[in-house]
Length: 432
Image 1 (cartoon, rainbow, N blue to C red):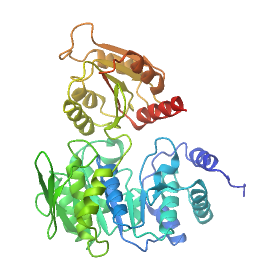
Image 2 (spheres, helix red, strand yellow):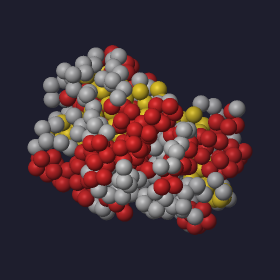
Image 3 (spheres, rainbow, N blue to C red):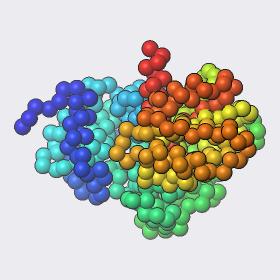
């Protein structure tokens, strides 16, 4: 038995080295066995959130509202931008290295000869950490799909599916019907199953009904309405009126907020939440990298949009921002994404593309990307006012955009978590 790492970076390096070859190993049997050996169980309500886009926003809104209501809240959310610790939060604070190491040791001690992927191991460790933290409520974000995601070895009291769109086709299928079935895998018999996608695939509805889940559909069981100033939520038995718009900007945020309020309606007896706590929670909620507008000039927008559904929401948000003479895009993306579908809605807004390579073997080649972008229709741009340049990494691409942009221009960083994380890290180091 070799000695185990004593620091978090060493632990993460060990986990990465163990499973360099198996990125996603489908099937939950191994995870379930280790979970049972750990006696891993939550003694509080568990809210689980899956979906193509909007998972992080919905989790963050729930966390913000429940913290305002005075509850002890645990959150598992992915991925991280700068520190692995961002994935585990207790009462709004990141878990300490020491707490994570203790849970890594616990999983390792019970794993025996069972092989776990990096994602499975870290998921079990963080759920172990949260389960032992004497929480009032746990919020768990599902990584990929739902049915076969490691988080799904826990039975949620309330399961939310935010949106169903085409993203990880290699693993989840190529149609909304196939993907909807995968996401519906987090539903449980007799438990609330909330779907805030306005057009849920028939497979999701059929699965919920087949297992006897209590299905909440947008427009049937809960809905929202609003004007310029405020909005209202209506559920089966609960109404919430004159709510402020969520501080997370964007077209889909009322869908996400409505799903969060439906979950709170389901849990209204176990976790009562007052009107003021809902209002304040929605106003203060923050989520890095989701249409995050940084203070200062030129305006910098960070958005992890990496599929067509998210990119069209980002484009819509850019269109609602008011006038900027020029828009620079710092853009890098994974090769396996629908690249044409991501850049198409953005093309009309971007004048200057700063294309970055990303620190991943799956990164799209910048030269190939540049050729794709150079061939896009010009839109409103005058000839000579469009440019496409390539860079070795997001930090260099961002530095170039900053050096060229005027103070009334804007820079939008998008295409991948790696793109946004690279710029966040560069900004952090330049501020020190």
